[in-house]
Image 1 (cartoon, one colour):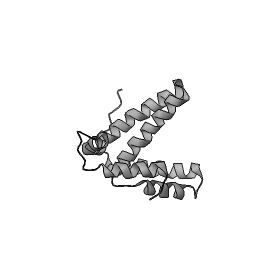
Image 2 (cartoon, rainbow, N blue to C red; image 1 turned 90 degrees about the vertical axis):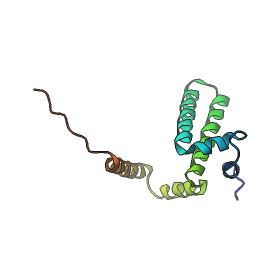
Image 3 (cartoon, rainbow, N blue to C red; image 1 turned 135 degrees about the vertical axis):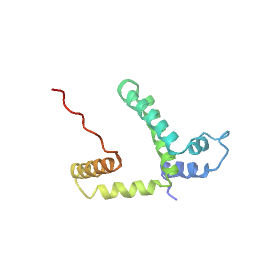
Image 4 (tube, rainbow, N blue to C red; image 1 turned 60 degrees about the vertical axis):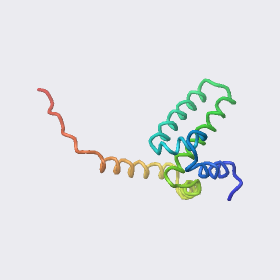
Length: 126
């Protein structure tokens, strides 16, 4: 195992799977599954944005830590690992950031369209 703080924290998060949710915040989040964790991650991300704009550096850094923690919990809940994320980041370094971003947008739009129900178009009023 790596000694990187994110890897150490992830190992602790994984160890909490199956723990008593009454005694562990991490276990409680994991018990709620990806929907609950994703909601909390979104809340923390919003707090981080606000801190970036109006708070001091210490508050901003604390909010960043909250986002990273909740992201790691979500990664664990989805049975992925930080190593999976690191590998993706390494793959992305092999191409221009703009090219990589454009390719993700195309794939994401196609995935959304494939899952979305067909919509009826409204007729324009005359």
